[in-house]
Image 1 (cartoon, rainbow, N blue to C red):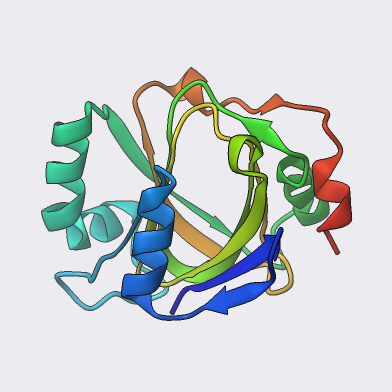
Image 2: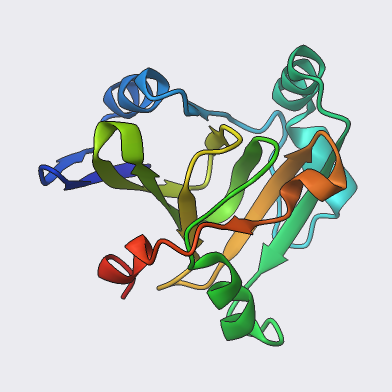
Amino acid sequence: MALLSLLDPVKKELRGPAEIKRFMNERGIIFEQWAAAIELKDSDSTETILRAYDHELSPYMKAHGYQSADVISVHKETPNIEAIRSKFLSEHTHSEDEVRFFVDGEGQFFFHLIDRGEVFKLLCEKGDFISVPKGVPHWFDLAPKYHVKAIRIFQSPDGWVANYTHSGKEKAYNS
């Protein structure tokens, strides 16, 4: 179950899915929870995972103009895991929406909404779907568990490239 932690200007936690969805959606960030149509195993292929969520995935992709989806899986034994982690720990934006669905594991999205003066983080876990709008400053941490299996959805592969803001904002929040 997702956990939303408001960090600045006020400190507060939101745990209820409806409350989290309302908070995120008011800020233009889509948050939903999806369930698989079939039972999945750790050993299932990318094709099986995509098929298990096709009832949610295909309509979303069609409605929003997405062209492709893949599955990424990282864990503590992944080669260069710290280098992979550090790549996403700096505040950045993208030229297209960053869309993720958590099949297993967890990860934390941090958001810096400059116009609202807010910083908050969303712990995403199995079943959580998030779409971060293009241009929204954010960063991502796969610690402390170092286990994320997620479906990534793209309009074009080059839209996923991080454009670092170099604000340094993340330094006050990364552990």
